[in-house]
Image (cartoon, rainbow, N blue to C red):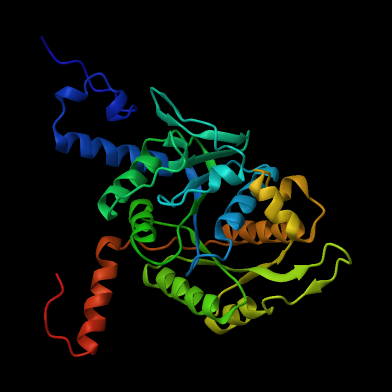
Length: 324
């Protein structure tokens, strides 16, 4: 009796013929699903920061909501495996993922915004994820290939801070990332690390959409005036020095903190605030960026880009031992 044909548009976990496939066939099937998923997404952006504590997830969430409110179909992938906060900021932390014959169904915040996060898979939000790089890479591949994202205008990937495993994995899996958005604050230490995020993007030949200066002044809730609490203008200065676009500054507003903790994006509940207006301007600049894309980022062997750079650095320092 001949074996029933594999259902190619289903994931291996939902296919009734998975037991008859070799590991090589399953891997080829996974790669095929990944390519097909990415072909349905027009633009893929990585939201990065050189260090933690700059409000990158707040920026990613509110930018995604802003674009969705403008009528674009948006996907938001929370790539912070160890500290996934996107569902909390969108009021989705009690939601759970469901499966279908097409794979995993993302959670919808609105008709135009769908979300995927490790937090949506945890029974206990206090449970730590203690994983090394290969496990995280495998999870990202599933988040991209086995989630039914559908047709999207934008996929925003909210990355954990730094330039290590997670950004490298996402860049390798997506292959042609359309752009990186780098979030910083005005302090010198944050600006120093944001320069590394710019260098990371250039090393991997990822176009840079621009730099956003978060916490750019404090908006007084009483008089409405802006106070330079953490200085101001550092992000714009860094953008000029690095020859990358400056997307804008987001003021500190107590209402932003309160609404984020309540799971209410402030661009949704405070559309007339200075910060919401800044996000609308940043959204327009993202639209201009994709409308002006001439040449997509070149495919590179991203899996070896990092280690090759380390070898070069060690050679310059006079180390002769081979880095394996």
